Image (cartoon, rainbow, N blue to C red):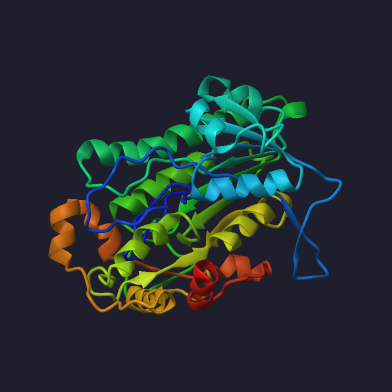
Length: 359
């Protein structure tokens, strides 16, 4: 999920992505598909607190379920006794992450079986896509786009081919803040137009594929920012740098960093599943984005390490080529729709989010 446009020191990841690794100047290892998933929450119209649904259990099919975000979503769904169908390309990987002993009742289905499990689900969550934290070649760029479109097309076709009695009623599909392009001065919300770079093009086609779903199915498109949490995502790549006293912003540090704590993203995805008001485009970012230099300063402070040594543009471009634009440029994205819907962010400020994660 996650496919996220990283503002500076971070890379995009899939779903949503995200689903989410950081591009840093070190050798890249190959990354397997990043998978994610959903849970269900219900917001009482009379309160601002999120509560799990009771007496209204759902059957949720999820693509991208074995990734950083997906694992947490599955854990939440399982804890609330929802039925979960993991749609994966690797049964063995999914079984290792969700062993029967810890996750009894979870169904794991490989790609040829997806349609059978999507039909009969109450909801589908689509968070799959190839990570982009690598040096881009024409072949890699093609796969970054096609991996998202291919999975989304398969999900949409399976829903659209369903008979009424077995058709899911909700599709929550990941996309990314890269949709807006990059800028150091503009402020983006859900009404902002798309950018004109490669990743904006990917997001447009990604979303356009999801929009082909049957109009009777409620569709929520979550444009995810950089996801922060323990044991994965961007921080998993950043923290080792700080621990050896070499942390610092990538490039100028002036790039905007639109982030979200993984707990808030999980809650947002849950709410999108259960709340009929959550429809259309919703930015999955915290309400207070920061410049990358500020993010690195707070991270260094939380770790008790300096954050003064920036990584120069030329070094990144030498390692990543065109892919360096992912970390050298960013965007300031606000969650206008989530705030309008009354979504309660637990971590609106990055300083508090990092303190909670690293405590």
